[in-house]
Length: 157
Image 1 (spheres, rainbow, N blue to C red):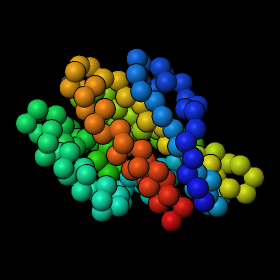
Image 2 (cartoon, rainbow, N blue to C red):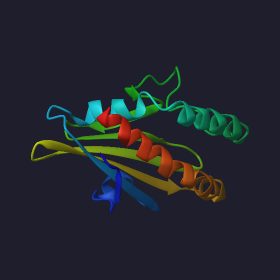
Image 3 (cartoon, rainbow, N blue to C red):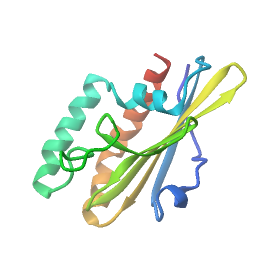
């Protein structure tokens, strides 16, 4: 099982109009019953300790700027996977993410049958709003790539 980077194969404007960043990684796994919801739960619901530590550090660093440190508040109950609100879902695709003042973010988890395997693809879309969003994106990019690949490895278990 190897995670590979691919060209995003989603309608970016339909999922996040004006997105300036998009990347995608995929992995093939042997689980004929896997759907997008369960793939997303395996990915996002239980992150590696080092990814959780990075998210905690991120939350500490962005709090003074008034940025969101989780996807929903008590006043706004939503369907969540990990810290991300679910935007939409079908058996083949789950879209999660949220809008913030510095950027809007979506993660798209697609599951497609391919012979006796399932192809699981995680696509990330980002639309920045200002210098803070562009700076934030530049700083997290090296970590983002590592985290997405590690999360996809978790889908295979």
